[in-house]
Length: 449
Image 1 (tube, helix red, strand yellow):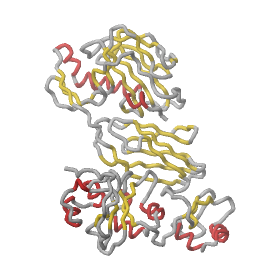
Image 2 (image 1 turned 120 degrees about the vertical axis):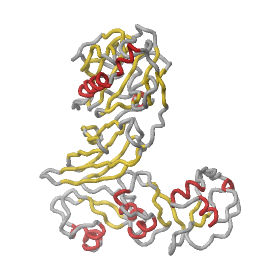
Image 3 (image 1 turned 60 degrees about the vertical axis):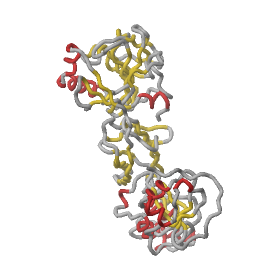
């Protein structure tokens, strides 16, 4: 069981012991501290003669066992998007070797976003720096001369094969007390994720900035299709609701004119969506609609419709709830079993219970790409909003739009019904991003991009 978090209480700390220590922060617990340092709670309690973990207090100094030949105060930094062990070492003035040893990094390439990285407080003599762009017809030697640096020292600091290996537009580090640097290779300038902690069934937004370069990439098994936005290239991708929780590689490729390619890779953790389980029992007539051949063929048809990546983005802001109802009968991601079968499927949208005939409206501006009957989904409408984003409206009583028709957010497109595989009057609403069903609630609550 996790120990209680530290409270902002005052106490008289005992004399600071020799060896590496950690200063307890608000919200810490012995469990979270032990996890960050790769220790057991028992080992931490024994090293600090702690009988009652609930008495942990903010500002308390804890001895951290198992770090031989290390002294001083150790601090924890959570790895951020775009950081590497080398950039973190430079950011906090720590030698890469010490950082690797403190964190037992057997494979630095496997460092993931949010990973606790231990480093000693205080500058240890390794300089941080500021970034300076190499201008056309400029050289590392010229930059070194202007900044009073050694040309070979600059090459070493920037991991250049030689002082002549830099190119126009590349950002080089000049030792100084400038703000923190990222670990992104040039010509990549910035990289952000939304949300920072993705989950199964969620939408991931990847925004990049690059200096005169085309950006492409992938996240796990899914290709990232970047589109031009006001702040730079942006890609939206759904994470499959049944994908295994764990680490997935984010790979970003920047290609400059002339064909030069730079690749950056970082591991991103995907969390379990903690979706509930649901047992459903249906009669013989509707059970026939669960035939894998029927279900698979229709899913393939829908997937093909929502796969194209239309270049023009048509929506703005958050999506509208497509039906007036405050009664959610089934949420997204629910693991389902029909008639006692296995839980090998999930609910791909949100069901709102509503009176039959109630109006169904478009959640956002777009173009209708399907309007007609489907065996399982009943009377269905699919709208393309651009950039690989689609919405689906299932089980309608009637459809009031046609393929090719442009709609605006709030336009009536049909009426609530109970057609197809349905046990009552309701609207089933789906959002697809990059060919993957995602939680619609995320689009109702937050703006993408």
